[in-house]
Length: 102
Image 1 (cartoon, helix red, strand yellow):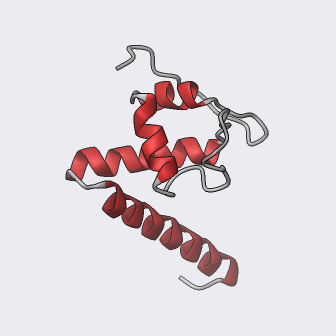
Image 2 (cartoon, helix red, strand yellow):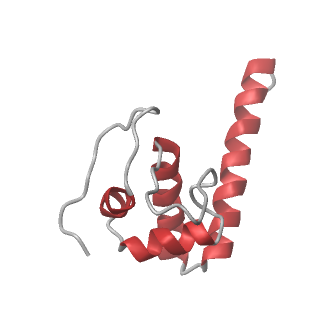
């Protein structure tokens, strides 16, 4: 693993390479590749592309996936489901606030 962890705010129009995303999450690039191929990370990426670029949402999702996998010893599919459900809950709560409910 890498000792240097990237921190900061990634602007939406900026992009991280595969190695930068892996370093920001303190994982091996292989971890990122597995999750892209499984369809749980980098949903806008083609798996054939040799130079991937990840956005801030991908970084946040990767870190969330990694926390769920590590904290709960979850496999990739279960972690993806938990992250998807958490995202959906956040979207629904935001919509409820806009509608003045709750």
